[in-house]
Structures are given as structure tokens and as C-alpha cells.
Image 1 (cartoon, helix red, strand yellow):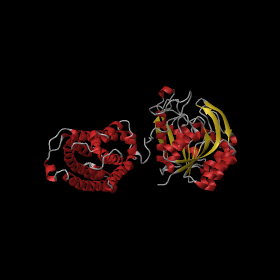
Image 2 (tube, helix red, strand yellow; image 1 turned 120 degrees about the vertical axis):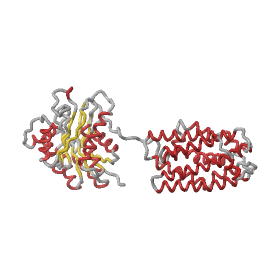
Image 3 (cartoon, rainbow, N blue to C red; image 1 turned 60 degrees about the vertical axis):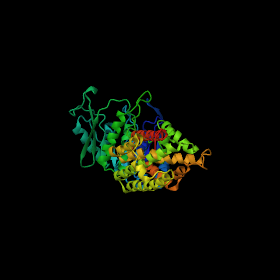
Image 4 (tube, rainbow, N blue to C red; image 1 turned 180 degrees about the vertical axis):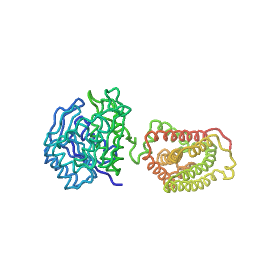
Length: 510
């Protein structure tokens, strides 16, 4: 799947709430790659703009050409263009590079009502850029300024009908579509003009595509954290267009994105803070391919994993001092558990949603079959026959563990079952590898050395690798909260493994 690219041509906001900084956050939140061409540098904070340095137009041109000639762009998004000269060079670049889609946010009028572009720049934007624009996103004052520059005197819209008419008039200036933002015309529940802020409940944005008008209704939000909403909306539209959405869906998704950004914003600075661009984005707490490592280092997992993998039963196998009668009881229960372990993996194959997962679980079942054959041979060296073990009742520890896994398999999804199976699969391999490599592990004359060798053998190592890869691959598709739920299943299964070792150390009669 190719990466979608958006070139943002705009000014920089040193406070990070608007401009290029906000644009890049929005594009990142949508999974789109951002290129930039900086038209101006600002010294500003949440209280206002203190100074602006206009980047020379020729240098802006070099930035644009550098990006488009190499990486390219699916969409170009414009913000603050600073000067008539800058508008001239970007218009030339759009024509020469044949950019597929253009989103133009005409940063012309400040929130306080001040005109940000000189008259010559307004004229250049109207005559040179609007005819190249896929969608223009003005607020009401900016729309009025563009029409005034074209020699048309437009009164303040007083209702939805006049708002739609204003959008249609703007569309005659050249853009293929206009999204007229209605934030300056708050409405009541009945869509009448609000006479005071207390009556305002609704804001309506109008999308006119040259033929049809579509209305997008949002809540009228009372928030001081609205800095960068225009930049963010236009960049969200650009991202959605780059991702292949049609114009109406691209705008709708962008409107909802900004609405949620305002609703979930947090206070920064003493003035108008930024919206929250990452309200619907989460970061996995582990790097790709490092889920198992993350689990084993999890603070809730570490103590139980240590108790499982460094249990006295395990240490007794390494030293060769584990009483034989207790090991024999463990071998019987381990054989009975292997049958349930195979059933659980067969259930995982059934619950798999694709052939890869089904085949992987089936391979693990076949591995368990081979492991069981080796286990029977090993048990025979202790005088235990298959028939004898099958007649032996399960201990409570064996029943509790095996039924827990089967219950997870029945009541939860495929991934939860894999997590319930993981402590046994991964743990035995980790225990055997440690005992195999430790210098104080007794090899000569140790009746349990064969057990260690079985679990470091290539066949078992391959099964661990396969099971771990399945987890790694599928864990990239779940949320962080789901990861924590699955880790709880892993912990419970590990605790039941500990009970299995405890059972092995308890006094029994064979």
C-alpha cells in the first residue's frame, strides 16, 4: 500500500497551535506523509502574533520544486501565503507540476477581524489560485473579502439560505467547490440566527460543489481552545482526499475531526490554546516485533513470570535433586495436559480468520503430537506407560489450567486464546534454554537432562518462533486497552502454570 503525500505551503506558528505545525500533526493523525514549503515565520503564542518574517518568494519556489520533483504530492494544501509574489510562484508551480488536488485555506482575515493579506495579494489569490483550486475553505469574512475584491458588495448573511447563496457566489470565482465555514453565524436549535451567545446551539458549514449544496451541522462549542481550527480543517480535508475519499465524505470526516479536537482540547498557555489533533490516535506501547519482550517486561508480569520460570521445581530439574516420585507425578499430569493443549490449539485453528492463522495453529497441533510421542518415550524411561497415565485422574491443578484455556477459547476471540496458550509455549522454551546454558546445571547423571534437551530441540524452538510471530503480527492490529486485557489473560495462565509446578512438588502417591 503506497504512502499518500500532501504538500503543505503555509506559514509556521512558533506556538505550534496553527500553521505548518498543526498541519503536520493533522496529516500524521490521518497516516499521511507531509511535505512542507514555509512561506513565513511567526513569533507568536496563544495570546497573539508578535512578528512575522516573510520568506522570499524565490526560496518558497525552491522548496516547492524540491518536494514535488522528488517525493511528489497527491494533494497540495495552502495556508498563509504572505505576499503577492509568493502567490505568483505557487500558482506557477501548480500549473507546471500538474498537482491532482488543491485545498486552499485563504488565511486572509484574523479572528479579531484584521486583514492579513495586502490588496495585491488578495487579487492574486482570487485571479491566479482560485481557478486552480479543488476546494476553497473560507470563513464568512474571507468570503466577503474575496467577493469585494471582485467588485461585489455582499451583506452579512443572516440565515442558512443567505449562507448557501454566499457559498454559491464564491464558487463563481473559480474553485471547483467551496466549503463556507459558518462559525461567524451561530444558530439556534431551530436554525434561526442567534441573537445572543446564550441562544447559540448550532453551527452549519456549507459545501457547494458547483451543483449541490450539502450542510454539515455541528454543535456550537464554547471553548477558548480554537487556535488553528481553520488550518486543521483544511489539512484534514487534504488528508482525506489523498486517501481516496470523495469530496463530500472528505469534508464530513474533516468537520467531525475538528469538532472532536475542540471538544477534547486541553488548556495550554494563557490565551487561545490549540485543539487536540490526536483525539482518535493511539500509540502502541511496544515497537513492531517486540510484543513478547514488552509482555515479559510488564510490571504486572515480571513477578509471576519469575516465579514460574525460576520455580523450585525447575531449579530441582537443573540440579538433578528433584525427587523422582514428584517428577513422575508431573510427567503424568503433563501428558494429560498435552492432550488438552492440543485441543486448545485445534480450537485456535477453528477460530482463525484466515488460512495463515489456521495453518499456523494446525502446525502447532502437529508439533504437540510429535512432542507427545517424545514425552511417552521419556515417561517410559521412568516406568510409566501410556495406558497407566491415561487411567490416572487429573489433579485439580491440571483441570483448572486446561479448562481455563478451553474456556478462553470458547468465550473469547482467537487472539485471547493465543495469549492463554503463550505462557506454556514460550515459558517451557525459556526455562529449558536457561537451564541448558547455565553452568551450574547438572548434565552427567541428571535424569532430567533429557527433558531440558527436548525443549531446546529445533522442533520446539520452531514452534515457539511460530507462536511468537503469530502474536507479534496480530498485536499490531489491536488497541492499547485491548493489549492490557490480553496481558491479564497471560498473567492468569502463568499463575496456573505456577500451580502446575506446585502440584509437582506436592506429596503424591504413584
